[in-house]
Length: 128
Image (cartoon, rainbow, N blue to C red; front, side, top):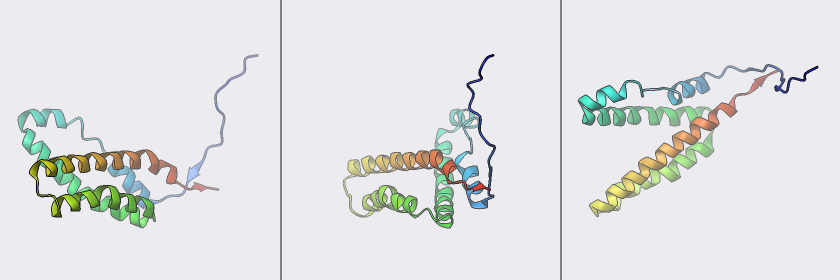
């Protein structure tokens, strides 16, 4: 007899959470299939489109995190993304330093979204 080493587990059903489902739709959206063809035609328009999408989606993501009571995520956004952005906007006058801090802020924002994307799936509550 051959023993099947596959993992055997009970099927879980999860409680419906509309806010978590909205967050999932935003974080799992895939725009990569349309981007290459548009970027060859108008790369500046593509950059402006991504800025517009980010400007609209970021406050909505923060609102969903507030509704989900993920205050640690909100605090980390404030410290790692919002604070450098405001510091850059108000305090830095050297144009080279502004560009560097802007790029660093965008990089940290991307890391924030990546970490959020890999951790939100653990927030689901099982239904017993």
